[in-house]
Image (tube, rainbow, N blue to C red):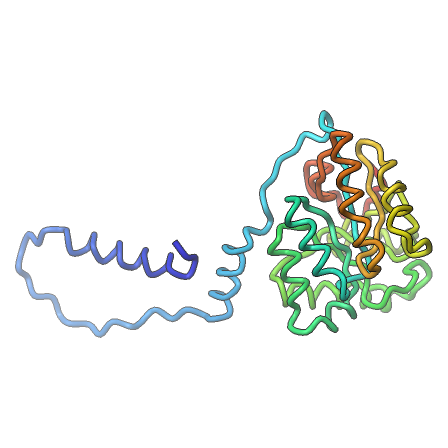
Length: 263
């Protein structure tokens, strides 16, 4: 059954049950004009999106026993993100995308960021304009996080629970602000250096050196990185790795304010 048909089916079922109850007495009750049910179209639209996307997808992995690895992609969404999502979808692989607010705003209609969510990937905050967060004023730091949070939630209905500080730049103030915003700081322990070395074979090889529990740093704004992903998945897959999101790697949503680099 299509999701949009579910409310209609429920109403029809209620009608059938009501008609099937025998009338014990033919007592005429005063006629009271009934008011039609009023459904907020915004609430209905968000409900339908959540039903269709199934967010968050419920997948349970025991990464204390399995060989798990979390692939993470920064700085998007960009012009190559759609191709990457196609590759991941065909392989039934989930990843974590740390998005930049300005890039989300530039994505017409938010199509790509909504697809990230609908495809079951985890989405995280990577600031509004990618500055080094350590050393920013409290007001600017809050703006960088909150502005991105607001636009992603408006477009997808998802409240992000993880973030990645650009350049890995963090300090006590960043930790305090992310704790207030309910965001865990996710760093990495495998850096593919794909922003510097635009060679798919090199990027895939570095990612292939991941160990159980690794968080791998990649960038979906580079075509060469996206081209490296199939080989990367083949290499890690042959080694028996299970591909998970960051939250799945830990078996729960990471704690706000805390910094994570690997399991």
